[in-house]
Image (cartoon, rainbow, N blue to C red; front, side, top):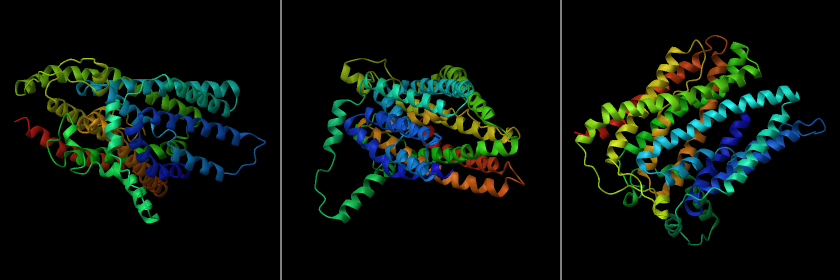
Length: 425
């Protein structure tokens, strides 16, 4: 667990800087930063595993610290979400994010299975790491040919907002570093979003902070549990590496089922039974909605329904996903499973990006990642402490704590949903 903390701590101070920088130079920067350091990190671990290598465990912590500093593996989600936000219209964004989750779930199925096959075939773990590093390197080459999603107009606007004044003193330089670190988190406070450029305004002053708080609570409930799940399974269920890899494959299959079958079915049911009633009370906008990337390329999209209807839809999916979290933890404690039916993730990202203009999207998603890094650190410490104190007497105590936190998140989401419903009356 300690190497993970060594990775999360520097990420708190670097992720916000990288994602804010992507608002000025483009999203592909995040892709390169998350892929290239990951390749070197895995190759270094392979080198450490060689019999002739005499490096101690302290180098493993150094590797984790450098990986967190450069964003290895941690910038993939903000890069993907920012790219989708730049390239898709508002009403299609949850579906596109759902497609991305399908791709992730397929990788989660194929990856562990391929790694298990490779380990059995070669008889050593380092071969699987080399295969993984090769996949990262191939993906980095692929990113070279991916078009940049951030419009040049948004890049120029973000650059114009950068303060070009020189910082004369060391104290002022440190103050600037702290400010750059905290800016992505402070962006969610009331009045920090550039509302002049947003396509949809929050119905309440504190709606966006409440949504972010609810998502953070859910992540806190899950991330720490995920950290101690494999040690818990090894101790209580006597799992070995084969069972752990099989578990991740099953989790990927369950996620694939959610986004291929359950999520589209809920979309259809919502559109057939719920959305028509809202459309009767909402104005149909005549103008076409264009994503920034489509606007630069002169492409048209289909006419949109009032964006507030889409926000209500996303809020209800977010709430439904949180309720599924609670149900899953409540009824599956005995089986010691991880709950993967979180349908609220695409809706949360869609909600967040709908309130943030293009030139602040990278900073906003970076703020979420900074918050996630803090949450991962704190939840790992908390759940690790709970597990160490209760593993002998009440092994399921970590699940009980997770259920309570999930219930708290549901309450926060319900409070955030009220302003949306108030605007529909």
